[in-house]
Length: 74
Image 1 (cartoon, rainbow, N blue to C red):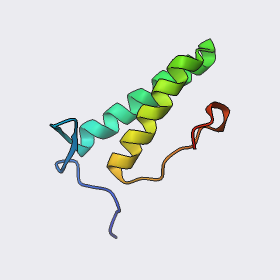
Image 2 (image 1 turned 135 degrees about the vertical axis):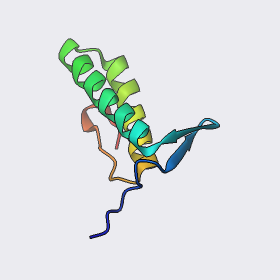
Image 3 (image 1 turned 90 degrees about the horizontal axis):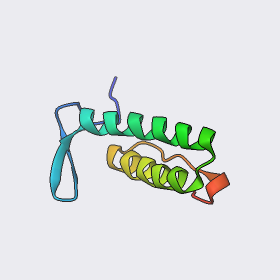
């Protein structure tokens, strides 16, 4: 079975730095956690920052990007 994701040791690039796919997945997990905390606290500014980061990381990983209709981010 072939997965559409990169192996953990393959690199993705962001802002002239190279990160492994595993590091990018870790950053995505942390971004989701931050988004959820910001949502509970009602902090729309931080929610928007995290939502933007989540979509960027998902794009780098080649996975479907989440939409955030409550923030008008699709």
